[in-house]
Image 1 (cartoon, one colour):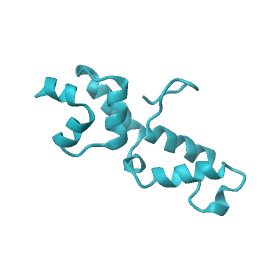
Image 2 (cartoon, rainbow, N blue to C red):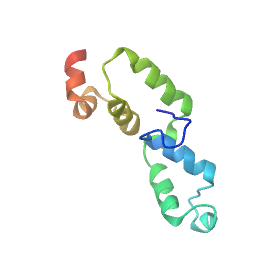
Image 3 (cartoon, rainbow, N blue to C red):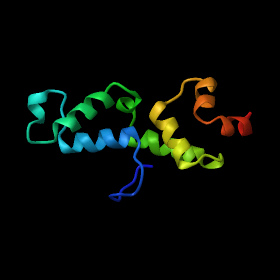
Length: 103
């Protein structure tokens, strides 16, 4: 999570949003001309509507660090970061085997 190397694996929604921001993605279709592909602008618009839009690199890194004591896979951490569950039921739906170990 929060990789610095190119092609280092799966990215969280936040990391994709951050990348698109650095490339100059905009919600205004005319603002995207030339800076990024139209498809990247569509992805950017979508990511602005989900939890990724309120996350920071620091919050994602802090979450990943705090999870070290649990038996979470990188995919589990990525799912939690991407979907930002708000209840135990939501977490259970994402990673039921881990929740059984915690409870």
